[in-house]
Amino acid sequence: MVLKVDLAKAYDRIRWGFVRDTLVAAGAPDKFVELTMACISSASMQIQWNGGLTESFQPSRGLRQGFPLSPYIFTLCMERLRHIIADAVRAGRWKPIKLSQDGPTLSHLFFADDLILFGEATRAQVQEINACFEKFGGSSGQQISRLKSRVFFSANTTADCQQSLSHELQIPVTSNLGRYLGVPVIHDRVSKYTFLNLIDRIDKRLAGWKASTLSLAGV
Image (cartoon, rainbow, N blue to C red; front, side):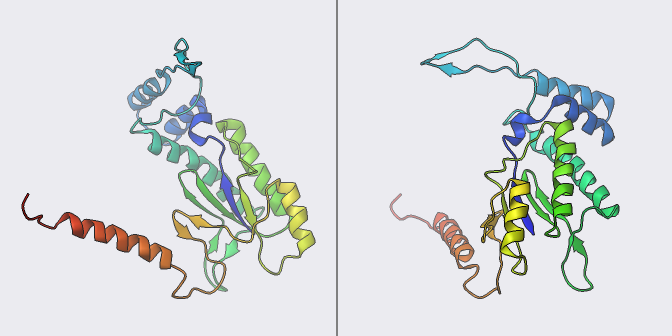
């Protein structure tokens, strides 16, 4: 099975204590940690209400949108989830898929808050996935948006098994995972039509670049 996981308000929910612990664990210098935490915790906000602004207040968690370090800090924090999954794989509790008969195994793909997880379609695996996210969420403050997440099962998984595992995950079943980082997630054989949409987008972008190099007469 493949899970496409959506994190609920990923940047807004992350706990500052978790950020500090992550920076320290990554070996960041003390001065850098203190300066970074000062930048994060000094933010203030106002809410527009009935046409006016409320008094400013300070949040108690979250990373500031627009702060140049926020994407890097968030990526470091998500690395903590990777360690939890890696530990479960080494212990044999998480059963990753194999890319080929003699090839490497694959348990997850991460790009910031875009997560895809791979595992056996079993109840034990579902329980392990839930346990990993409970452990990570308990310390980081992150939560899965289960209604926005999707789970895809291989064709040899029975309908009853799919419904049972989907119910335990509290994540809807899908027959098409859509796109990951703008690229279609392929379930069937790749043909010349598979990436036509991507090729069209590249052609349009190149056409725009070519047009910008034209010398306009009379200007």
